Amino acid sequence: MTQAARATAARPAGPDASGARILVMLGAPGAGKGTQAERLAARLGLPHVSTGDLFRAALRAGSPLGADVRPYLERGALVPDSVTVDVIAARLAEPDARRGVILDGFPRTVPQAEALERLLASRGGRVAGALYIEVDPDLLVERLAGRRVCTAPAAHLYHVESRPPLVAGVCDIDGMPLEQRRDDEPATVRTRLERQLPPMYEVVDHYVETGILLSVRGDLPIDVITDELVRVVERAEKRA
Ligand code: AP5
Figure 1 (cartoon, rainbow, N blue to C red):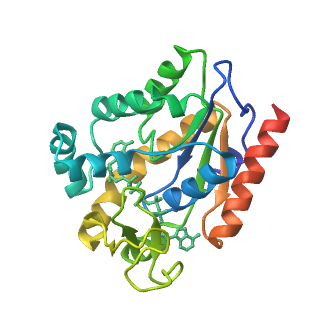
Figure 2 (cartoon, rainbow, N blue to C red):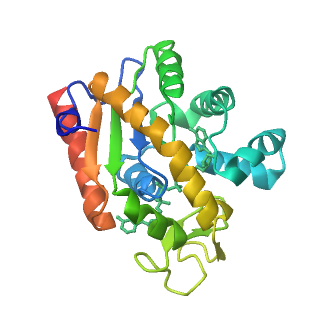
Figure 3 (cartoon, protein in one colour):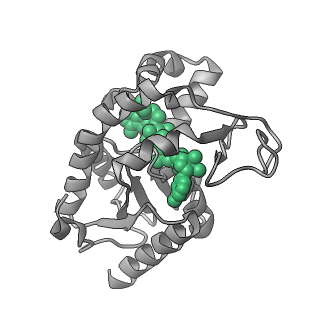
């Protein structure tokens, strides 16, 4: 993406006509979307909705959705748009999403972005801002190799070096064991990056064109990035 494209944010805003504040988080696998979405959700008082977490919960539950998405997650490919959009539509219809949500990992293709726009427009809403965490692809493999995830449903995130738990292998928050995600194995990470980066860049360009992209650097300490995200959201809302 060009420098000019990065310097956007013409039309982001706070709650839309439906009263909801819908923010989307964009970034490569391992850019820090989940880490930041969890923190931003706490700071802004909005639910954190991650398509990856919803798919992994379906896998663990052994549901029909889990059976549908398993082959895609295992080989690092994107789940088909129709399945993903239905999952998000159902989640956005839940009562806690009425005030808004932070969408983590959705949309991941331009058709998903357009489906989200149609869905929100049908209830008088729109996306308020697209938060793009930019990280050099060379950093991503190391981030994903060191990631450990809590096995409780909240899936709290750690990293063996940059964010270790107080007790090795145990979640600080709920005491559950930590595990390595199966799709963080090196071969699957390579496939995820090869297949998922091109459509992600198209989504970034889509939000540049619609004037709501807000970019932040993802190679800074986690707290610094969170503060910067809050700052860019608040600044954009003041301007709107
Ligand atoms: P998903 O779970 O969304 O995976 P992802 O997009 O590949 O993103 P990750 O969760 O791997 O990374 P992240 O950016 O959240 O980084 P994190 O914060 O964990 O999706 C999984 C799969 O589901 C996909 O492959 C696909 O098959 C399917 N899927 C999901 N959504 C879909 C959709 N919309 N359409 C189709 N298919 C879909 O951070 C990574 C590590 O780095 C952590 O250990 C963290 O502690 C560390 N870290 C974070 N920030 C920093 C920092 N600033 N400095 C140092 N370390 C850091």
